[in-house]
Image (cartoon, rainbow, N blue to C red; front, side, top):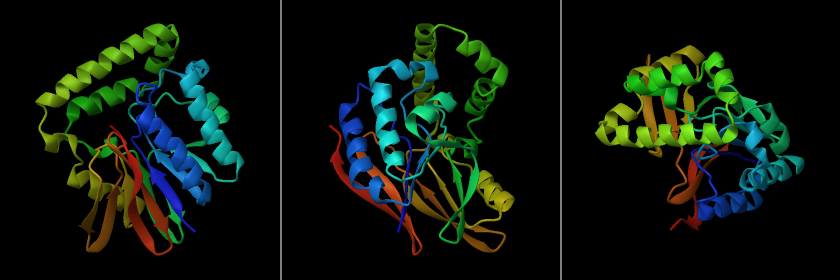
Length: 244
């Protein structure tokens, strides 16, 4: 009896070791789980559901569909790289798209799930960018562009983002303690699971005299890892896959 959590896999055709590891994870681990949650950035980028015709994207969707068809519910929070995942993808992959944040019950323990970027409030430039690109009017305009043009624009935005990261202090790109405390208060829970920061760890917080725990999920750039949640608690589990 366990539920599996992953995030920040950043799957792409250019990263075959991570993709193979993900497929092996679905077959060997997730197939035994009560449910699988993907908390954002399943893909390196997602230009729109009309890109499902791409062989790589179709293969990932089919692998998830096989898992859900086998009786394992798959629930997905959209991250900062794949927030354009919509119902067409959900249907092709057999997954449920869930809100960010989302409060769920895990074996009797209320648990808040997030991608994690909303907690990085010190990075005000990113938060402004996030607000713009999540605007429905902006998204409708973007989706009217040809797919190839959308991919070029995304590539340019990613290069700009990587350049900006070099100039940002590490703490700016991490979560803000005040935002974490506010999330615990707003949802009345004592456990939070998120990704985004690529800093896997377990953190303890004292919020209004209550002991809370925050689990940060690993990215899949150099290794595979998932969070295993059981009635007894949480444990980060390394997978036997090394990415060259």
